[in-house]
Length: 151
Image (cartoon, rainbow, N blue to C red; front, top):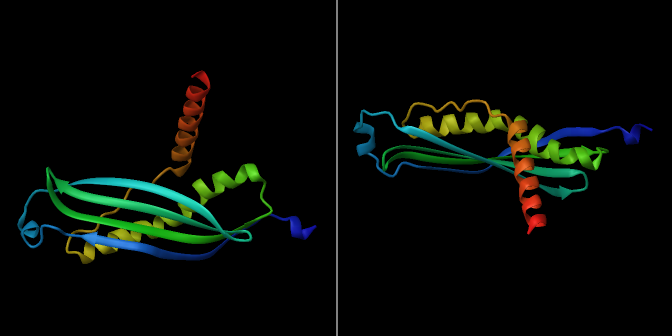
């Protein structure tokens, strides 16, 4: 009976990719204006073994004022999660909500550190509601499916 207990564990959390660009250095450090910050977030999941899944959270932060780029940083923070004995219907929310929730603080810290090391004040990203992003994606999929059926 104990073999049927749901299992969820973090096997490893790591930086899969990290890049930072400061295309207008050194002149950009002489600027006095504060750049606007644009943030994009994506997550992806894939099976990598029996009961093992890699979830990768990609966060891109672009700081610019008008057309003038201050910096661009992108991090792919990934984790290997062991997930077993979980109903199939629960897998998608676990991979799209629970795992990104675990990875986000690590990704936020990596971005803040990278931006700081590039010579800028650290960027502290606001918390992200992955559940609402997941629900939004489900609604978009349902709308697309209903459009296809209407045609």
